[in-house]
Image (cartoon, rainbow, N blue to C red; front, top):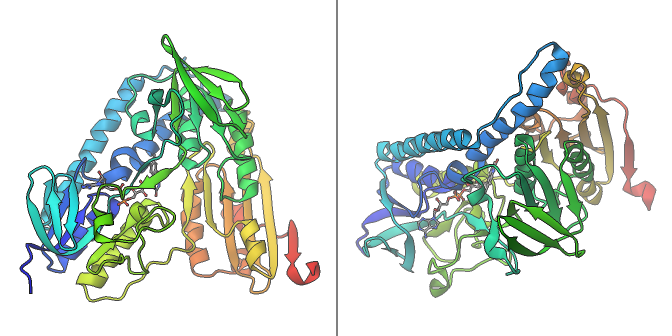
Length: 461
Ligand SMILES: Cc1cc2nc3c(=O)[nH]c(=O)nc-3n(C[C@H](O)[C@H](O)[C@H](O)COP(=O)(O)OP(=O)(O)OC[C@H]3O[C@@H](n4cnc5c(N)ncnc54)[C@H](O)[C@@H]3O)c2cc1C
């Protein structure tokens, strides 16, 4: 048998890679990890964490406004973008150090280098030229912003990567995209005082989400002064002095200080040496893997965004953990990619789990829909025009709750808890039997009694 330097080589110290490395090491494996940028990966360095910090910052403006209705006199608040970014950077550096310390504590060897595959057991470290023989290899290289076709002026356009480090807050920003990253940044910049235009080619934002959620959030964003321009694309960006002129597909123009594209992310598969090995790439662009995250090459595995399954941090972590349990811990663990609760940290937030109404109608014989919209209590004295939306989708045959969709304050926190019930296959009767907590918004989830509508396949045929 060949002599290996390590039992496991992990490429990428992001959410999935770090978890897999430390769990494998805890089972006694000799593990090395290569990271070409910063330990922690997208989530910690330029994704979930800095994004949420910016979201918090952006919400103070509304709080200051709302305070007046509750008797407070707030002087004219001022905001410093450089302070926010410097504080955010300090927190990110702290987290990066904590991740690095965890790897050290678990005796994982960290190499700061780009790594590429030379053959099925050899990793080439670009920083040193060193070659490492590995018994198993895990690819956890994540994804990267996709900037779309090479339109004129694309060099003036930033992605979410740069948005976290702008030297100043743009007075006017055009964001192209309709997914959660575009929507979240639109709400962040609007909350901080920028004039925001969201341009999206489809007919409504948040494709793939429940249609009622999409409609509700779009209206709420408009109420907060965001221009949501659906059915358009950016065709060119001109630089005129300090200003950018954004050309849209309907020949209209918008002046802006910054233009950001958040139109999707691509798995980081390029230049890894996968083609040379004949490692199969799925038609959606991610590395093809089986249910155990094994690629088409024996002893090479892949987890997280590079596999383009469900591109979220908790999923990458779960996949990395399961890989290590299975390959080094002698366990048989599988990752369930259904019923993944998820949030959009827009203003107001979105929290969803399970089927959309369209999916439920497509897959179930009988679908009962419960929904409600109401003015959240806090908005009354504040005088704020906003409404919360909640929807439960119930399998009319089994009474199981198969979908829950919330747009409103703390929807991300709420959906984490509803997720437990849905995961446990709770029925609508279980929801109804749960005592309400009053006065809360969440009590609506256990007090919706009237079906808004019920669809029956048999009745339709
Ligand atoms: C703006 C933004 C906001 C997000 N918000 C959320 C959110 O709120 N909630 C959520 O769950 N998810 C969110 N995500 C998604 C989340 O960040 C990813 O799903 C998660 O980070 C994927 O983890 P990963 O381990 O697959 O890859 P990553 O965390 O991306 O890690 C991959 C690492 O590999 C390194 N690397 C790549 N190639 C090589 C190489 N050849 N050699 C060495 N190192 C290499 C990279 O530098 C990177 O550090 C967000 C993403 C973005 C961009």
